[in-house]
Image (tube, rainbow, N blue to C red):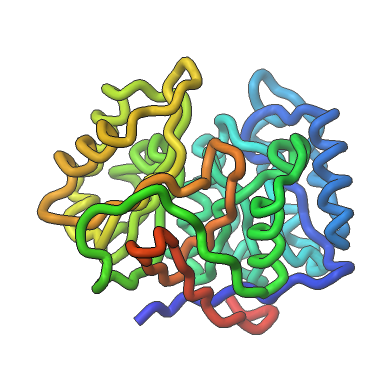
Length: 310
């Protein structure tokens, strides 16, 4: 039985943090993205380091941690959005204050570099988290209808629409399991550490960008060698683009998965989430099912937790 709960839903007027734990944030894109968040009726509160730069990072490790912790300490912050991904989370992940994170159930929304944090919130705190748009990326580039609606529905406590798929293989009829995963490179980067994402008994969602086939094959093989794929219930493939920006061939991706996963595991592909447009929001931790006939991914979003219960 899935013991995950959803954080309390947002409402018009809710305050949301905008954090930067990873790469330098483009100021112009940030300004546009924050305005788009305001148009949803939300009140963005910026992390102190949001416009800082230290090499490729949004401030030094200490500045990024402090900016994030200060937002978390504000009781009125009802959700935590992230400005962008890039690289930097792994440098600060061990120093994050999990007691502070756990002090109040909040929606955390991001993808890419944020993958270990989002899955950590699900596994450690038993709250659902959102693999979805980041403030200085998708909103700044112009919301698309389904993309905006999936983001808004999850955060405002509404039932999200089923997510379209391009195809399926194998038997999905008996599969109803929690969703886990995100960026493939980040899932493999944490193997052998306390931050590795447990995948047994879950449906694994994966996506990535700028990776050639041999690296995708290597990462899936690394997951297999680590035993991470031994007891998964299914695999859902999101967007995968090659280093030159072209889309990988689906059949070759399926072959990589089938050669890496022990035993017959159902596979679905063409899920529009990740480094793509539209980047639909997915509730990590929610129980998911795949309707192979209708080519739809459906969610049983968990009930909302009470404010202040971690």
